[in-house]
Length: 280
Image (cartoon, rainbow, N blue to C red):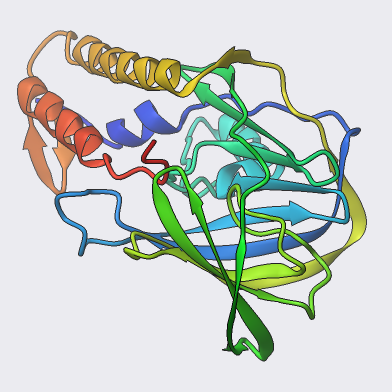
């Protein structure tokens, strides 16, 4: 019996990393947030956690997942592994993520550009309407030794509460959120499906500069269609993987499963990721 290990990782992790030219969006700070969220709308008590990154400055902000923020180090680690013939994406620093979009914010123009890869192809998701409309509240509290103030807004079908501090001179925040007179240190929707908390902030020794990668422009309806096609492509890859000679199984949680069972597992896992941060 031939056993294939880490098939899920190989199918979902081997994505090309696009280099960004050193011009354009100048950033001076690296901010890390811990985000806790419920990705399955039918099991909201099951939470996922990951670290996301915000590179920001006076005029621009760039929001990325861990893999995009650390792509150079991950690529270097993978290059060393290639020479040995043993590829381990987790050891190289890759982490599973549900935040696939790079978000580029231009504060002076009040514009946001969204870039992502689907089926190894680059796309620019058409810009949302900006700026967000914030309502300042009277509430204040202490957070990580900062005095923070409350503001509320609505975005993509969710009501949000944000806590920002005037003590950090960055008018930015996680994901698509910005425009308050200070850094957003905590942000959550009122149902607490998505909850961002400041983890760390560092002034960079040298500024880091980004440009938006090229990509075909699509709207959200086209994005949804492409993501559905992506699932079909993944399943087709799985079936090809099982098409070899002899009986082939995959180890899932220590149990060997055949092609049909593995296909069912993949479909279920993808379908469970149905509580996206943008509802509309």
